[in-house]
Amino acid sequence: MKVNHNILQLENNYLFSEVAARLRAFQAEHPDRKLLKCSIGDVTRPLPRIIADALKDAAEEMAHAETFRGYGAEQGEPFLREAVARYYTKRGLTIAPDDVFISDGAKSDLGDLCDLFDADNTVLLPDPGYPVYYDTSIMAGRRVTFLHGTQENGFLPMPDPAIGADLIYLCSPNNPTGAVYTREQLEVWVQYALDRKALILFDAAYESYIRDPALPHSIYEIPGAERCAVEINSLSKMAGFTGVRCGWTIVPRTLLLDGASLHDMWFRRMSTKYNGTSYIIQRAAEKVFTDEGQAAVHEDIAYYMENAHILRAALTKAGIWTTGGDNAPYIWLKAPHGLGSWDCFDMLLNDYAIAGTPGVGFGTAGEGYLRFSSFGTRETVTAAAKLLETL
Ligand code: PLP
Image (cartoon, rainbow, N blue to C red):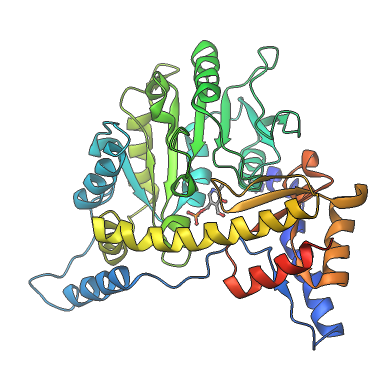
């Protein structure tokens, strides 16, 4: 018997466990000080009423013989695949419901997609980035190369023709930097992927936070992407579904790589290893895409974006370099006084009782930076902002 030694190569999830341990130690030492958590990567607003009601109604359907449902459609219920496809028409895109695969969230799909590719592929990862891309690539035994985000490139690294890549992860708006690729930049990425016959895995988990109408929400807004890109999205951050769990992946039928249809492969893979997202959850997800549902979730998004604005304004007032926060729920800041990420984290915690997330935890290019999240309550954010102004 042999285990997957690739998994043993991974470090323990040092970042979040270390942040949690330091916050616990701080609270134990200072039980009377209120910790201002700007580190939280999870939503805090409750589900909109219309979504909660849809969950209740669907649960009730399950209690009656006439409306009870057992196993669902493998790829997701048609009503939800159609609702997702319609969502893209807002941007003038035609996505076939048949190209939409419903899942229990973006993280699972990002990991599961690894099943479709040979271990002998080079993965290109923008650094800093969401740690799941790196960890799942290493688990699958792939080579990983990095493209560094810097202040000079606005934390939006562009392809280097001298660097080879087969699988390219792009996240826009980005976690952790909040930076968003422009249309022109994504055109360059799509051309690079087409030239190399590479595949882009486009993580659009934060697209609903984009405010600037010129910025693309979907990779399919770029002509040619239907031949070189898969798009992963989720209701976690759009609609407060982090605990409810529902997402989707678009795998166009036009995607033919290495002589194979990725759509057919993904269908085969999903119908073998996944028995579908709960019917109850899919009914609630359907409601998110109605006009009423969109109005409700956009109220919560506006609340978080106002938090982002408050935090960023305070940092700017303090003369600190930031990016993000305009079209994303994350603000990426340069640690003041030339501090390293962890030293900055400790300084903010000990001197101001403010918690951030050290940038270096998202990759070596994050050293010297910190991530603030806007998912906290208004009360926390305004209290933190007042202190940050004096940094
Ligand atoms: N992609 C990015 C960039 C994220 O930041 C997250 C969650 O934080 C996910 C995907 C995972 O989202 P889900 O809750 O849909 O699994």
